Amino acid sequence: MIQESNNNKNGKALPVKKVAVVYSHVKREFFPTEEQYVTEKDAKTDAMFIGKEIEKLGLECALISANEFFVEKLNNKKPEMVFNLVDSIKGFEYLSSTIPGILDMLNIPFTGSGLLALALCYNKFLTKQLLQSAYIPVPGFQLFHSHQDKLDTNLRFPLISKLNEIHGAVEINESAISENEKQLRERINYLIKTYDQAVLVEEYIAGREITAYVLQGNFTKVYLAEKVFNKPGKKYIFATFNDQWSDEYSNDKTAWPYMYAKFDDNLLKHYVKKAMGITDMQDYAKFDIRLDESGRYYFIDSNANPAFGPTELYTSMGYIIQDLYGVQFNEILKRLINNTMGLSSTNDTNELSSQIPNTF
Image (cartoon, rainbow, N blue to C red; front, side, top):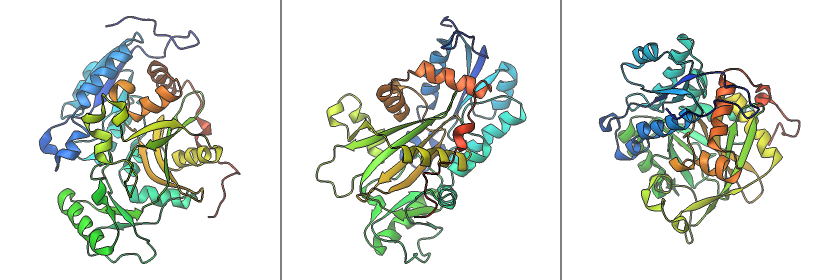
């Protein structure tokens, strides 16, 4: 173990000495496509990296896979708290919500969102409805259980189709955009047959794209960054699966399909805090937002427990919070430890601002 002082920034000792990092148990056969498998295949490697970063704080860290021996290993290791990095159980992302339930049952504090927030996160349709009910702007949307479902006549093409229960930009590519009903129904049919789940269809919003990270600690901090795209000649500009997961971009920044630049707007920060509160997310979260030419925001994606790690793991958390805003990963770890163990106040998560209009 790497020994350093396990102190907070203010010199006080961290409230725990023994933690565990819990990560997804991944096998190729769990996933219907190679694309979905790619989003999870490095789960153990990433957990090992984060475990070493935790040990640099002077803490003892165990790595535990979320397999059939999960509870037994927890009982053997007896961690004082858990970093929950589980994104799927047997290939099903929505089942990851069982991990907080188990940890709650065993009275083990954990980082990230609880059972309710994770269950909501893996139902994009319900999340959209929640945001809409709180007057947080979202594109027009509809859930399809079959490619033959009647199309809402209020929806305007082009439309983008998304898997309702899977994140990680899986199947987000040029074919995700439909310019007419024939294309749309063909796309929905393919997604439902391949992944055996409903498909969320929403209006494609042309314009700029903003990523918002929320990190709790002594206060709730929102970090905004704009995706500055390098896609000349493309009709539809958005981050595809290949943009986010391909290895070809890792060593040559000039070839990256987009970079992040700081963005600032207090109104958007209020929307983000409100969105985090209404979806019951905790500790850290990520939201993707579109800004159209008229200056209107639209929330297009919400992520509880998004990819966790520093820049070395190619996470947007690292690129935004660490690189753009200068918050080092060890400081993020400390803030989450303190927040999880109840040493900081996060009551402002549900702060509602009078600046947010109630109608649009």
